[in-house]
Length: 79
Image 1 (tube, one colour):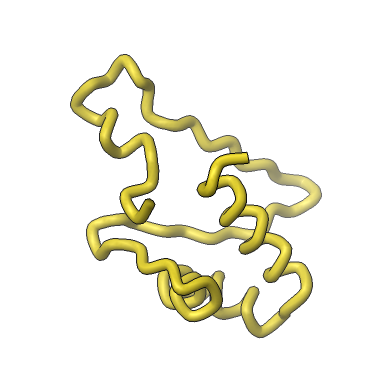
Image 2 (cartoon, rainbow, N blue to C red):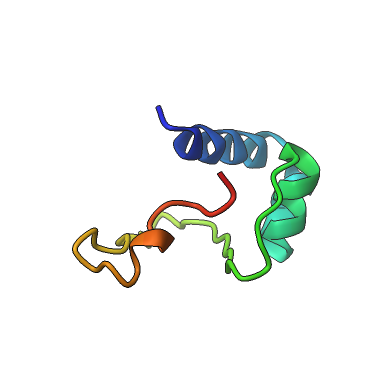
């Protein structure tokens, strides 16, 4: 598992177990992640946190590796 996927799983697990963290994550994900995991996300990176509902599903399509102008954005810049 990549470090990005590992961090994602840790964030999700903490949100499931800690209601205060979940509320902070939804309101201010950058600060919530920094405080809980000591991971600083650069200011130029937009972070959104949403709660999936039983009647909704969010599919995130990453930047295509073929799009060289966006290739650097395909992996998290905080690695």
